[in-house]
Each structure stands twice: as structure tokens, then as C-alpha cells.
Image (cartoon, rainbow, N blue to C red):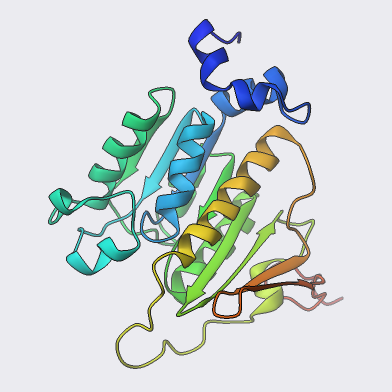
Length: 249
């Protein structure tokens, strides 16, 4: 693959980075990334992946846009209220960069459909907003051998890590199983917080595709937006992890 004259202009800032360059940009244009969820986290992640020139962006989301989403879900506009989120996200990302083809899956990811959906993608971005989906993604990516970026947000706090199945600590190494979902209405999040975490997820996908830098593996990055403090916590594979640990005997 060779870049067109316009692509050389569009991706000029990438081309000047020795860690990416023309070879890395060509890898991005050939890459296939799956966004599970196109809400608070998936919106900024999708924007930056599309802008980076990711060739195929899969979007899994069965929700319809509601007014309460607009405070943080920047892939959508007021005019999109009542539409499926995958429809407005596809229009937004493809308008930003026609090099990026968006494939929408208007369904909720389940144990039954995950193998089919994950099969053609190189990297998965977990942009979901509930524990059951996050454990499902961890299990499905492990079974399919797909690297993924996890992120979670609540109120003013967020966390993220990257997992290479079979090689690094996985989500279940940190959390054995889903806790009870908190009672009452959702606690936030503050609107700009998913922009921070979703952008980090996009950057991890870009680094994985191009092979540059050090991924956020075996480390959990936490963000306290109230105090504007970031911490990195070392994480080790749990030999007794029910997902990636060694079986007894």
C-alpha cells in the first residue's frame, strides 16, 4: 500500500514521527478495530481512531440516543435524538475521515454472538458502561485471542488497562466477578472524564497497531479528576485466575 498525495497531507503529523512513519500509517489504514459501545468512552475513542486512519471501525451498540446522553457522548448531536447510536456514529466518523469505513452492529454483545463479531478485528476497545458487559468482553477476547483496552468511569473517577490474552494480566486477574450494580440513578460521570479515558484507549489501539511505545499492560492507570491526579498501579497475572490462570494439576 502506498499513500496518496492527499493522505500524505492528512497524516503528515504521523509521518513525521519516526515511531509511526509511512509504514505505521499504512498499518493503521489496514487495521480493524472494534468499539463495543459508542457512548461516553466510545465517542472520543472512535473520533481519534477514525482521525488516525483506522481502515475498519466496528461499532457494537443496540441503544437509541437519549437526551441524557448528550452531556458526554460527543459522537452524536441533538438532531440525532431517537436514532440508533450506530447510525449517528457511522455518519460522524465517516464524515471525519472517508478512509475509515464503519461497520455497525445494532445488537448487544453476548456470549453467543461475540465469536462472530470479534473474528475479523485486530483490537477491541471496551467502551461499555456496566460490569456484566466488561466481564463478557474479557472472556470473549480471551477465547478469541484478541487484545483489548478496558476502561471504566464513575462520577469523577476512571481507570484503564490494556490486555494481551495469555501474556498479560487480564480483567479477571483484577476482579474475579461482577459486583452488584449500584442502586439508584447513575452517578455522573462528569462529561469530560470519558474524553480522557476514551482518548487513552484510542492511543493504546494505535500503539498496538503500529508497534510503537509501551502498552498499558500489567498496569492499571487510574484518574481522579476531582484532584486531577493519575496513578499507575502494577498488576500481576493471577496464577489462580479463573480465566487466564494455570489449571490445577
